Image (cartoon, rainbow, N blue to C red):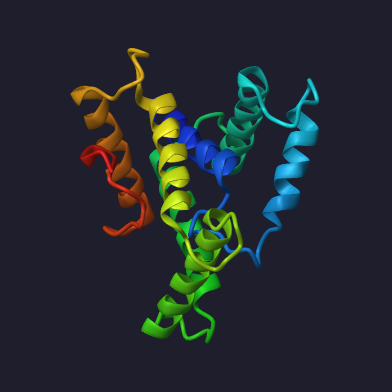
Length: 196
């Protein structure tokens, strides 16, 4: 069970520290730029503007502790399956509340379209580095390379700079688990297992 929590938290930390632009969050809810600055100010001990491995580890440890405290509603020091399920339902309810702009308790096609457009806008803002309103092939390549480096750092267990078959399978399994937790079979991210 701790291994599962660790995996969940590792994914959450990776998402938070790399892009903070998951479709589950909207820019209206949180000022992520301020959050990143706050995080750097607190954990960037050497003051270089980046989190090194030690600083990132300190962040992860505090993040895990806070997540465990938040999820451990009965205060027994462990997160039960029931508490995990309840946390997942709370996240889904919050996302539904954000997306359900007309308050009817259902997510209509129009509301899905709005959410998809907001996600596209965040993606454009993140990837369109020259600000021309288009994502060029060069910008796509930069994003692809960042994603590749992230995958190597996370899944290249033998450290050879490439994902072998078993490492690809691990990446694919993690991706499928992430999609399952998100409650969707669709994603705009490249399929790591296919090498995209």
